[in-house]
Length: 308
Ligand SMILES: C[S@@+](CC[C@H](N)C(=O)[O-])C[C@H]1O[C@@H](n2cnc3c(N)ncnc32)[C@H](O)[C@@H]1O
Image (tube, rainbow, N blue to C red; front, side, top):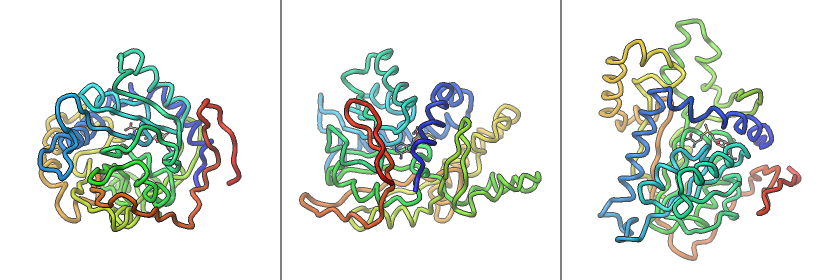
């Protein structure tokens, strides 16, 4: 079950301050940098079975789920990718539209308002890469309704890069030493109530093994690494300002060790990359699980309710 109305309300309000918040936080900038470099490296890799960048004038096509304000989408569009950004929240979609206008990205970046549980509505596919950053996928209890529809939007040989919050974050656990027990242990229950700009909704934490299972046999995991493991996450916002050299050193430590077994699954986030090996005509494995989509966004942008 996910509460699309509360998510829409909270993140639409958040959209107004979201980019400024990210710009102020070295931890967010560092993490975004790692993720972006990884995505670009996949798109430029020469030895992939189906090279994503096929030649001059042919651009890799990236579908972004829960794109937020489109910060990453605009970044990739400005670096030669053809990006289709999607998000559920009115305010986030408006921010993406504003970026397209102000940065003149009409030919490289498009936007569509939808939930990632409705991939059958995505236009412009198939895509070379399906990207989700910074825990948008943690807003649903089960990843299968998203994973099972990936063959509708992803071409064989293409990739998913998903950045997801795991149940174990050492910096959050360490908050117990300061008596902040709610923060310290919230992930261990695997489910918590998130509070975003006056709206409350459920958040769920996933292990990489659960993401693998959701993706199924048609996908092979080619990279797994954690993000903000030894370097402190954004909520420790005073740390980089007070200890800039130590913060830099910890990010360098992260860069060395976050692919190691066990360490690759623990941190503020993990980034899992999988290649879609499935061929054309492969049947969709839609599970009995209902994604509890409580609304759909028709093409004219008006929202209509559907039975849960
Ligand atoms: C923490 S923000 C991350 C935004 C962006 N990916 C980034 O890197 O900054 C989470 C985003 O997920 C979106 N979201 C949550 N549930 C969603 C759903 N079911 N379908 C599509 N987007 C969703 C929210 O509207 C919000 O923009």
